[in-house]
Structures are given as structure tokens and as C-alpha cells.
Amino acid sequence: MDQFIELFKHLINPQWIIDHGGLYLLLLIIFAETGLFVGFFLPGDSLLFVAGIYGGLLSESFFNVPFFLIMVMISVAGVLGNFVGFWFGRKSGPLLFNRKDTFFFKQKHLYQAKDFYDKYGGGAIFLARFLPIIRTFAPIVAGIVQMERKKFMFFNIISSFCWVFSMMLAGHYLDKFFPTLKEHLELIVIILIIITTLPVIIKLVFGKAKHPHPTHTDVNE
Image 1 (cartoon, rainbow, N blue to C red):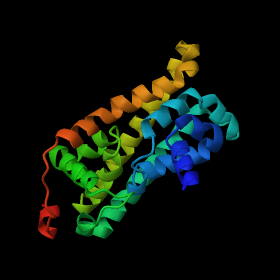
Image 2: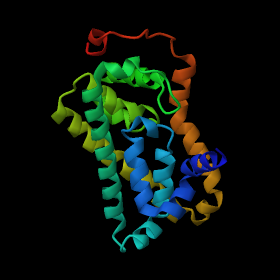
Image 3: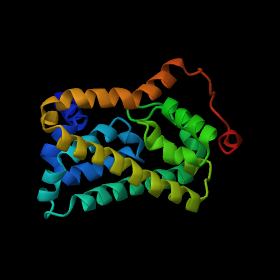
């Protein structure tokens, strides 16, 4: 159990991921966090920001490929993660809404993503990419409500590249302008996590306690 807790602490520590897993672990985490409901707790935003700061090291560790190509590869991982979530939603359908809560699956997250999708329609796929937890479940909900595949893929690709490039370039250039940035990395990551998760936390705390278990018709309306 102690080893599991220690691993969990490492997986939510962006700098540890960069130092010990490099690009390979980074790609795996972005893939999981953007489409597999077991990955909702992973640090997508802060991980990308730190990856931008350590972009040079990532490039050196992977055959010295250009930093631009590193960002493209991570963006593709995000696209694939969302597509897997979309496919899973189409196959599993409303059964997910009747699934019991587990450590890795919470119905409230699924309902939250559905509310977000109902409010913003297709654009929810783009907006959700910038919101922790929501981005994990949004493609699953899009699959459940049978969103058109071409429409989904359009928003999926655009959102993934915008998310990855904006986060990584922010870290990359802020590090160039402020060379001492690495000395305050823990504080920056904490601030970034608070900023990105605050809207979700507010929704969870102050959102209306509704949503009885829906019927098949309710989910597909």
C-alpha cells in the first residue's frame, strides 16, 4: 500500500515524470488523462508546462529531435486519448451512468462532463481540453450521445494542438525570459493547478445536487 501511495505521489509530480520517465511516460500520461477515465487525476496542464521548461532535455533524450516535433507528438497522444474515450463512450453507452463509483470512476465526473457538453455542444470538446477532469470525461460523453465522428475529430485535433502548444510554449518562453523559474517550480506548479482546477472545484462544491440515474432516453437526448 505504501508503494502505491508513493507511486501516486510521483504520478502527480510533473518534475518527477520529466526526470524519470522522459518523453515516453509523458506521452502515456497525456494519452490516459485525455480519454481514459482512470487518468482523471493526472497532472495534464502542469505536466505540459514543466515539459515546456525542460523541452531541451526532452529533445536530447529522444534522438535530438526538434522541440516542435516533441510538441506535435504530445498533441497526437492527446488526439488518440480523446478518440479512445469517444470510442469507449459509443460502445458502452448509458451503462456507464449506472455504474457504481470506484476509486478510479466517479459518476459525478461523468455528469459534470455531460452538463458541460449539453451547455456548449460541439465546442465543449475544445473548451473541455483546458479543464482538468472535464477533459477526461468529455470525449466519453460525446461518444455516449453519438456525436458525429467527423465533427468530434475536428474539435479533437484542433483542441489538442492548441492545448499542448499553448501550455508547452508558455513554459518554454517563460523559462527563457526568467532563467530562475526552475528554482520556484513547485510553487508555479501549485499555482497552475489551483488556477486550472478552480472552476471544476467550484462546480463540484456549488453545483446543484441533481441527476438521478437516467434512462437510455435521457442520456441520448
